[in-house]
Amino acid sequence: ASGAATQTDDLLSLEFSAPRALHRDTLGRILKSLEPFRSSPALLVAADALLSPELARRSRLAKKEREWASGLGLFDASNAADIELMRAASYLRSGMREHAMEILREITMRRPADRLPHMMLAYLCLSSGAPTALQESLHELRAAVDLDPEEPRGRLYLARALFAAGRLDEAVEQNRQATLLDPGFGEAASDRCAMMLSAGDTASAEAACLEALSRDPDLAEAHANLGVVRSRRGRTLEAERSFRKALELDEGLQDARYNLAALCERQHRGKEGLKILAPALLAPAGADAQTWRLAARLAVQAGDAAAARDYLKRSLAIAPENEEARAIESMIR
Image 1 (cartoon, rainbow, N blue to C red):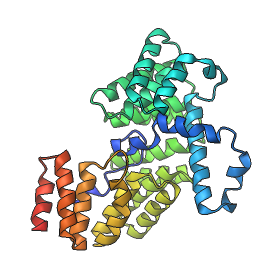
Image 2: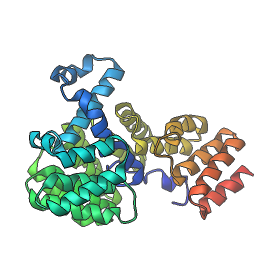
Image 3: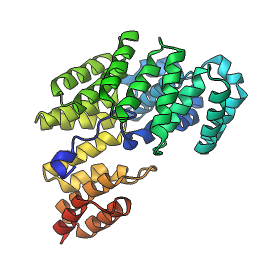
């Protein structure tokens, strides 16, 4: 991207679409936080509207983590006795990701007809960001889908991986198949919104977002994507409301955070934009060069030249050769 106006809408909330989205829902985080919610009473979610905002947010996150784990098959009773899978899970809980992936690779070689190791390995590969990880993830996801063609979540993940690989037509087809298998699948509709946006079809994208939210009003990714749609269609106030709603539901959704901060930049609200972007700069996974450049531009707007220089330095440490960075440098001078 060459400037703020073109950068703002580049970040779509589709779990496997970009590294900034990937760090949010890694399998390790799911496994680590799963146990306290394994026996959560259904009343907690049912009474969501009566809870304080913070408890409501935690309830939604717990529900989402359980859905991810269930989709991967981690609740299957037969898996609890699988020593090798539990060993891989133990490594994940300890943050030893590469060790877990090596165990899963061994399992998939020895037990090619076992779907769960393929799914776990694909998920970890895709969220690792390694150069060859995407192709390995595609291979594992295709194996998982072949083993159970009627399971919609496997097709959903495959569609996301294909989208990340730039194979839009194939991604849309797998997304369509997932929706046919489960017509109430809100995540599939939200993903379709991101795909249609990447194709430049904002009308279809908005329809998909609204469809997703009709199925699941608390789907943060759908609110974030709807914000992108509305921003592209010039409906700035509605876009801001959508981004803020997405962050209210999931404060770790960095796509929405970036886009909201960039929207502030377009309106010359530099100080406010920096405040919104701050958690992304402090995220454990670290900010990328694009986010540091946005921070630098916002600092320039806020009149903080020292901070702008610091943010620009951090962006150049990640991406040394960048024309936009040079343009920001001239703005600071």
